[in-house]
Amino acid sequence: MNWLRPLIVFLGLLGVWQAVVWLSGVPPYILPPPWQVALAIVEHWQRLAVNAGITLAEILLGLVFGGLLGVASALSLAAFRPARRWLLPVLVTSQAIPVFALAPVLVLWLGYGMASKIAMASLIIYFPITAAFYDGLRRSDPGWIDLARTMGASRGAILRHIRIPAALPGLTSGLRVATAVAPIGAVIGEWVGASAGLGYLMDNANDRMQIDLMFAALFVLAALAVGLYFLVDRLCRNVIPWQIESH
Amino acid sequence: MTSTADSPALRVRDARLSYGGRLLFDGLDCDLPEGQTTCLLGPSGVGKSSLLRLIAGLQHAAEGSVRDAEGRPLAGRLAYMAQQDLLLPWLSVLDNITLGARLRGETADRDKAGALLEAVGLGAEAAQLPATLSGGMRQRAALARTLMEERPIVLMDEPFSALDAITRLEIQSLAAKLLAGRSVLVVTHDPLEALRLGHRILIMAGRPAQLEELAPPAGDPPRAPGNPALLERQAALLERLGRARAA
Image (cartoon, rainbow over all chains, first blue to last red; front, side, top):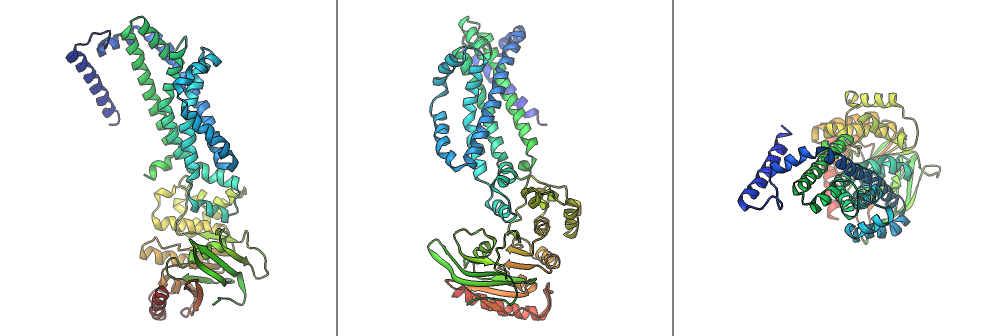
């Protein structure tokens, strides 16, 4: 049964958490026990749901914009040789500057609303998407390209009919990584300056010593990130069934 | 030494290729006779596949002219079949067969593709993905894709070498039947294959390589593998290939 193993892992982690609370004797304002966090989720579910919706929207829009930008960059790098000289330094720079350092600047420029968080999430996923898709585009089987050329295919037709489909497994690998890291961008943005979202809620709860609510928001964020990852993973498998068959 | 024919489908003149600082061939002339199958044998690394790729227009580092009997370029009159089936894993067998038309932006003749799949014994597999096919079935699909191009000249680079002995014999007979009347160049390591399929047999040997023509067994291809004349020639051919490798 597919659901049994994750359930066992989840219950095991809860058990470890509870055991640490019992054995260490840490006070609940440092580490609340799981049941107290569960109570906080039930008590504050409406507030958690509203803020989770905002964070989810930021993550999804970040995935869309960062993904589109990454795909466009990878295609430009693969299709136009001069673009490599101009775009590769931008790509490397986008990773060289820590996202934490950029967060205050983006909040300053784009405000406390969703825009700065979407920009953060986009920025953090831009590199994995671009790198994975570009790598896939570069690694097309040379035999396929030779065959297409003997069939009289143009460079554009080879890109469209062979190189892009062949690079889709690479793109989906990048998308999986991007889905795992996108929440980081959104939550960092919320910590730096926001009026809504799970990151804001955690920060706010921490300031008010509502540690159980802070952990409840963290729990919901983790559930959101894991759920989103598995959803994207499933979608990727459905979009490119030949990748599974070739394993 | 050169290998020329009276009424060639194509003429290779003054071919020259260096690879990794070694001169593979220089001043090489070769003709492919109209409507016949020419089999090219020789030791590994002598330049057989490079010569075939030169004819296909895929060997950019090579020099020399490849023209038809009237001195015209061969663009659009060649079909290519490699050792690997080169089926695209994301396309169905039928869509793989019609790849050439799609790459050229033409409307594919799906009825003709269906008929060709029937001819190679894959009528029932038209909608399947290549990953579901055996090695022999995949190579038959590749043969159907080659035939779908309807080119008068067919270049085959060790097309059946990855198959088991029995499947190879079956597909050799099928290829000989379906390619009858076309001008075919088959690069092969298998003396039996050359003796079964070749109207002409060429041996490439030496450094820089030269071509030597050997008389094929009597009778039209595909010749039966147990044919006494063929078996007698096989011994002589093996002995000649042994000398070529030692040279």
